Length: 177
Image (tube, rainbow, N blue to C red):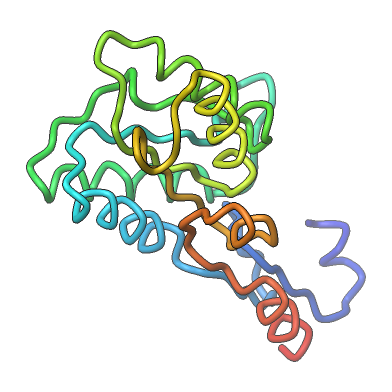
């Protein structure tokens, strides 16, 4: 960011990152509120064992984006507000990929008490989770409800419930700023 700042041109950021350099404009969504909406949807459907497939951050691969943590905070707050118990084994890393989502769902299905509802921090991970359900002979939403995040183009054809993130509009607004 220091090198970009030295260019002395207007800078803008679209999305959530852990830094907001002075003089930059930032456009993004409230990831915590979006996650809360997703988890509350599962709670309102009657689910009590709700897992989250998220994007982990490791020391080996630092991540400047705050999205995974912001969505994790929303997930945990919704559980707490509903009086539901948080179970650490219900938080699994899906690496923001379909393959990661599939592997994460496989791990969740292997638990003694698997979740009945899953919040995936991205639609890609949700698609992978849905694939894992099919491979296990289960279906969504009859056996396990899944909600994703982003409103990816695959969400509608797969009947995936999702939280919309208006990427194109954010880009336009960022460019305007």
